[in-house]
Length: 574
Image 1: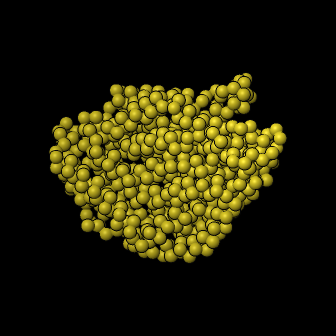
Image 2: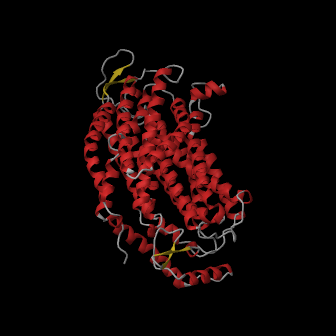
Image 3: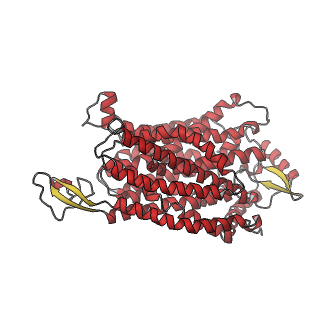
């Protein structure tokens, strides 16, 4: 279903980052901090690979809840404006570039560079999940969007920060020969956590699903409530923390940035940092080898090296600021921010509108599972197409298809039969949703892959992964920031009236679209809300029209971006 694409943004960003990290790791030949040789087989390192999968899996849990399940659960008690407010909970994952150099540099040497962050972050996350699980469920049922948003904002912030540390540790947990598999571990782990918290949790939280497959009372509580789900994962967090803290050792290597790779470029020795996204003046190859030997022999880190670490942080931020100010980069940033505006309402709100029409949460979640294997195949086709000499041309084709799919999805939701809760009730309508979803997924993957190819061509290799992360951050801003406005506009353009359920007479002054327990709400006074004008269709079709106007501007701008020389994308070094 095209509308479900909005729930996949985080996964796509992680996929691109993991793919980039895997290729960069293999290209650089990252020196391993836990293994001394290159001869280790992946079978002999299965424990380290499994640990990476588990660490990424638990990071996917809060993402699957905040970006997948929660909007569906909130629609029962909250308006679209409140759901828009909740989208703020996903912001930390989009802006973690702002503090990633700090995580990559500061640590307690006795504990370990990565464990210094992972252990306390997981303990805090587990405590919050267990201690406040009942509280956040009560806030959900009472319709308090702000408190629910704050709760998940904190969880996502902790997960995003932990992701930075795990990304760095992934490069040293495996040997040089197998470090490329770190990207595979991330893909597997994140997908398990995300789908567990989205598809599986939505099904087990749906009383109708539980009644059908587990023989439970359809009007009773679900098999797994939000409180129970959070508590279960809270204990998993604490158990994994205990395992990592006690059984998994991290060698006390100072800011593993000294475990670097020296590559020759323009007849100069340059050390590319495997962890921090920066290029600062580095020691010579001989000095690096001497420092690594000192660390392996247990020698303490000097204050001069600590000072150098702080300078690296400052340099990273300075270099990013210089890059953002480049004319072609500023133009590309504008494109990334506005490119999704035309299809954002359809992809964000259509699942919620289907929920209003009686489609079960189980059926909506199952659409994602149906599309997922076909999406992998379409990714191969889109990847080959995008790998052309002009990658922004396939991107523009994907934009056209995606814009048409957004309009078609909006029309399909409008015509969707009321009360069709599952596929058996309306197989043709659900089949059309799946077809639209596959086309939307294909066009999204085509745009995503083409843009990634363009990123790789223009990125400054001296900045490591920071250049790519910066562009991905800007692209994320174009998705997460406008969502608040989109949902607010849908509510603003919607007109409803409250009528008495028994007499059908108008009940003026009663509020529609809020929790039934809210004073003055229509449902509390035995009323029902009739929709006079649905703002979703107004906003979505208007956005598609705006996207069509943007298409003419994008055709001209993308052509200019491809004509810029490579040097125009590189900031000067000081």
